[in-house]
Length: 461
Image (cartoon, rainbow, N blue to C red; front, side, top):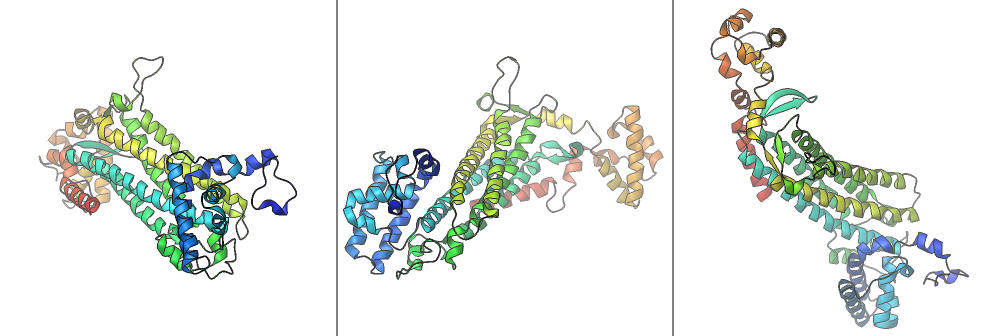
C-alpha cells in the first residue's frame, strides 16, 4: 500500500496502489510546476504582508520555493507518483528545505484555488506564445503575397472555377483569419487573467488575507468576486479551446488548399524536398505530409474542446475531481497549435513554390470571365438580369462548340447584342478581370497593394 498523504489522517489506511495511480496527476500537471512556485511565492508574501505569518517566515518560504524552482530546472528535483500532484510535490520538497515553516505555506489556501491559479498563469503565458507564432505565420503570408500581387490564380466557389484572383489577395484572406485569431486570443486572455487565489476550497477563508495584493503580485487584472465561481469556473479554458479550434480550422483550410494545389490535377505549387516525403513503394511520389498532418491534428483540438464541454455540463458547484481532466486537453491543445503554426510557417517560407506559368495558363482555360461579360453589358445599359441570361446562353453554345469566350469572333459577340465592340476582348482578359475589381476589399491590384500596406502596418504596430 502507498504512504499516507498529509490529508489522510482522517483515514485508517492508505490508498490502494492502483487507485493511487488512477488518482494521481503528477505525470501531467508537473507542467505547472513553475507556475505553482510563482503562485506560492505570491501567497507567501501575502501571508507575511497581512501578518498571518512573520516577515522572516515569509522570506524563508519565498527563498525555499526559489530553491525548489532551481532544483527542478537542474533536474535535481523530479517528483514521482508518490507526490500525487504538483502542489503536494512542491510543498513536500519545500518543507524538506526550510523545515516546519514550510507547513505554513498552505495556510488560507486550498488546492482548489491553487490549481485554478496555476492553470491561469500557464495559459496566460501560452496565449502570448501562440500569438507570437500567429504573427510569424502572418509575416510569411505577407512576404509571399508581396511577391505575387499580379500573379493570377483561379478562384473557386463550390470547388468550381468562379473568377480569377490575385494570388496575393487569396493569401491575404488567410492573413485576415489569423488576425481574428490573434485578436480573439487577446479577448480570451482578459478572462483568463482573473485571480481565484484566496477563494479557498469553495467558501473563502477565516484568515485576513488580501486577495488584491496577490493578484497585483501575479499581474492578474482582477479577482473573482464569488469564491464558488472562482474555484469551479473553467469558462476561460473552454474559450481558449474554442479559439484554438478556430486557429486549427484556418490552418486546416489552408492545408487542404495546399494539398489540392500540389496534386497533379492542379499543379499550382511544387513541394520542396525539405517539407515533403516519399512513398515506400512508389518512387515517383512526393507527399504533402505537413498539411496532411495539420489537417489531421485539427481533430485533436476539436476533441479537447468537446471533452471540456462534456466535463463541465453536469458539474454541481463547486470543485469536483472531474476538473483534473481539464489539464491534459489544454496542454495538448497548446502544444498542437504551436507545432502546427510553426510547421505551416516553415512550409510557406521554404517548403513550396508557386508555379506562376501554370497559374497564368490556368486562368485562361475556363469561363471564369463570364460575369465580366454580363458586367460589360450592364455598364452599357442592359439590365443585369437580361445580361446574365444572354451570357449564360453564349457560354452554353461556346462549350458545345469547344470554344472559350476569348475565342469568339466580334461578329458572334454582336449577334448576341449590338453593344459589343472590340474592347470586349480586353474587358474579359484575366488581368483586366482581376484589375477591374477595385471595390474596397476586392482583388483589384490597387486594392491588394493597399491591403498589403495596411496589413504590414498592423503587425508592425
